[in-house]
Image 1 (cartoon, rainbow, N blue to C red):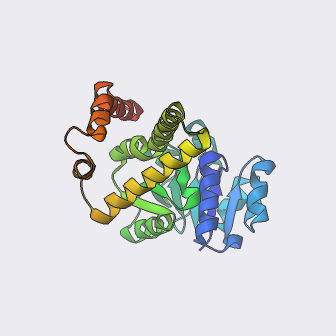
Image 2: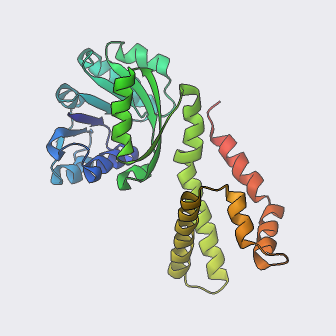
Length: 258
């Protein structure tokens, strides 16, 4: 198996790094294409093949991951469309570009899927959403297996990709914002900034570990650590009074493409 990644920006670079870290293919079977030679240098140092010519990467690959800005997708796909044969698989990670446009620009010969990972894929911790467009169950399973090496994958329809993006791709930024807010609160309460951030991150790791181990609803887990008249319930109620849950839901809704 040979893989090409077109685009080595924030998301494309994270995907390339995740593939290298997860060893989904030997480094020499990973081709990374980007107009910027500087963006390619770190992947070349790790043994990947790099090029500033998209066609060169596509010619070599079985699976092609399109990871470019939405407004660049048309030009890139029309440039490589003649190379996208029935033996190849195209995975679009160009958020916001619909399947109708992808098929128009890329043609209908190759297998086609759409994917929304997040940047934690570089550390094998992505939550990825995968929507088959023109792909057999076998090809879909192959692509899912690749993403599963770099986190968890949810197969969905195209309509749910934007929801997945809000929850997991945009959502990772929302998690960062909570960490920042809680860390600043820790500073106000007397900890140094570095200590406060470390405390908050470890607390979140613990919360996730408990939910995964016990497989319970978050509210049930909350009940375990709240006592009548205790500090925890007072803090939770103060957060709700300030609109915590409503703010999160409104933020997610604002992130979904209409």
